[in-house]
Every structure is written in C-alpha cells, then in structure tokens.
Length: 370
Image (cartoon, rainbow, N blue to C red):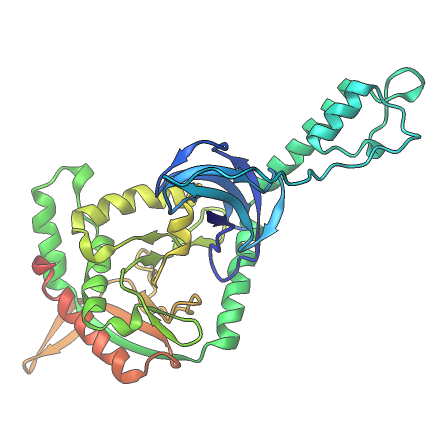
C-alpha cells in the first residue's frame, strides 16, 4: 500500500490544514493528478499525487490540521487486491445530557463536528434547532474562508521564519561578476522581430536557460544540504515572485535543462499570475533545487540573496545599466548586468562558485546557442 503524506512545501512549513479531498475511495489516480487542497501559510495549495493506483482509504478529515509527513491517504497499486477498510474514529464533540436539542440538530452537529454547548438555542424553552446548527456551521465556514483570504501576513511570517533559519544555520559565502549584455539584448531584439507580441521572449527566460546549462557543467550548486551534500539530477529553478499585497512566492520551473527558451517563456507566463493569485501546485513549491532572484525591473544594480534551505545556492540578477567597459585596451559604454552568487560554504567553496559564475557568463555571451 502506498502512503500519501502531508507534503513539505518548504523549510518554513510544519503543518497544513486539509480543506478539500478531490477524490474518494475507489477512484483511480495517476502521477500529477491533484487529489486535495491544503491550506498553508502560503495560501490554498493544490496537492498532487506522484504514484498510480486506486484510492483505498482517506485517513484525514476535511478541516483537520496535521504535521508534515502525516499519512493522509492510502493508495492501492494497480493490480493489488483490496484489504478490509479500517475506519478512523470521527472526532465528534460529545453532546452533554443537559443540552436541549432536537434529535435532528444533534445528528447534524455530529456530522459537521459542531460543539452544541457553544450554540444558543432559539427553539421552545431554548432548545437548539436544526436551523441553529446550520447557522453555526455557516459561521464556521465563513471564518475559515476569511482566514484563507488574508494570506499576506502569514506569507511574510513564513518567509521570515525560513530566512531566519537560513541566516542562523547556513555559512554563506558571496561572489559577484558582471556581464556585457549588449549581444544578448541585440539577439533578443532580432528574435522578437520575428514573433507576435504574444510570443515575444523576455530576458528572464534566457537567464533561466543559461543558469540550467551552467549547472549541468558545474552540478555541485544544484543540490540540497541534508545530512551532507545531495546532488540533484533534475534542475528545477525556483524564482522569486513579488506579491501585490506584500511578501513573495518562490514557484519553480521544473526540469529547465530539457526545455527550450520558448517553453520556459510559456511556463513563466502561466506560473507568475498563478503565484500572485496563490494558485500553485505542491510540486511547484517543493521541488526547487536552486533559486533565482532578480530586481531587474528596478534600479538596483546588485542583489545578494539568502539561501532557501535545504538548497545550497541562490543567484541574484541586478538591473541592466549602462556602464564604462574596458575591452582590448579600449573604453566603451555597454549595457551591463551584475550577477551574484550566495552559496553554502558547507557544500561548496569559492573555487566552485567562481567556476559556475564564469560558465554562466559564457552562456549569456552566446544566447543563440542556448
């Protein structure tokens, strides 16, 4: 039997609240299917399954908050025979003998897990009626919905917790380089002349592809630090998205190394609006192997990021500004971008970081080969 557990959606997550099951026992599921929605500090997240089989048992009830790693459901692999279902006792508020309520009101309260002692009855002699219980259930749902509609503060708290943990536990080292972006800008302009407005490329897509190619050559930075260095085969690049009401989300583009610049651009166009509307899948929040942050739309030239554990590196891209540039004994003015690397000194050292930045720089100087 396959155990489906409450996923970890980042180092800052300790627990989640199950809002909705989107499947029922007996349903067939396959890898990538969304089977539940979980409320976290980052909003309401669609939770995917990564196995194929038949839903055997749902062990967690809706509106129940459980720690990361808790078994939420059992999935029977295809071809495996069913076993007798083990019913999980329902968490029902006891009905005290002195509480006056109609039998129907008691039954509805038990089904909806409503505490009758907290309800003021409007029936004869103060008895609790069916309508009283349904009103209380509606207020409970409204309160939960209102809590989910105000995510900005909780997101800031989640980010603060993760960044505080990073500063406490990770020995950062920092490197910086700068790149002449003239050729890349000219190449983008030439490419976009051939395209419709809808299909035009933005520098962000080129940057992500260049990062993936550099990581393929210097893979030590595409890793986690969990009881030692664990290199990751798939390059999943998380990128920082600023939210309109404050805070940030860090969704990931998965398997960037095997995607074209056009595919990366299409994914960015899809995922950024969903991130700002807090409509992300669990894999888009939990699978990043390295993070990229950029303040390219502003006037900041250099940004040094804080590593998001358990990753071992974060890249910062500044805005492109015109600067003096010396080359072959000649002085010129070029569009220049500063690139920074913040890396975990337990996992790599300055030599590895320098090799990576140099490789990234070479990739950006040849965008037509990406």
